[in-house]
Image 1 (cartoon, rainbow, N blue to C red):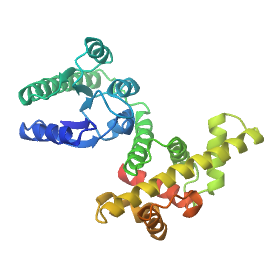
Image 2 (cartoon, one colour):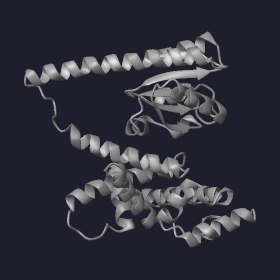
Image 3 (cartoon, rainbow, N blue to C red):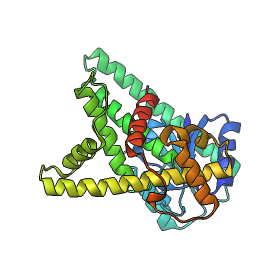
Image 4 (cartoon, rainbow, N blue to C red):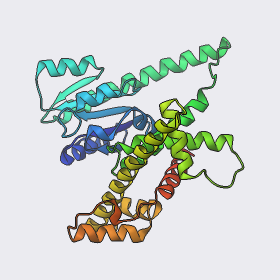
Length: 305
């Protein structure tokens, strides 16, 4: 069983992870400190069975996050110090399995998670029997779902990387995800071509697809706006990695992503700016948008195998 913990208190995340491990309930496949860092595609890609989520968080609270998860297939357990009957009722109306109040009681948490785990296993058993019956009756139900799942996993993989880079809350990340989808379709249609389309060509096609029109003036306006959003988002990722490098040069995210997505000379330049508390705009460092975009796409593909 795979668990994901979302809580702005690192001590609570650590305690819950330890309880899950000690009770041999499964594995904690990830953590987040705010609801804005997760969505349905991300949780599905991480194959999360049970989401534990706090109610009160600084940017996006638990209620709003659950509401935005839409048709998430896993189970949700909310853990919070809020004991308002109205809040609890709203949480249950959105589909949570249990609401546990803080301070956390070890035995209550383990008991609740075991019940949720048993419910999932029972549900899977029933679904397995149903699939067997469908096969026997000639209803395999494969259709074209594989392709849809692949595309969805690719976007979820890209979203995970953008979260790792500390830029998922930037408006430009939506443009980047649209560009990932476009490159996936382009690669299928242009199989065999040696190079990716130009950056301008990517922005042009994504803008036209987004607007649903070929009106030159409208498309050009959207292109320029998208370019600015994307550059701001990438600059945020550069700043995030530079901050990690200043804190700990051996930080795993800094080691993994700094040279992968950026020219290291630019990373060092941003680190020096942060170290001297110098306030700069985007012009202070060179942002290679094409490199970032291509690396994001290729690395997202690699991660889904």
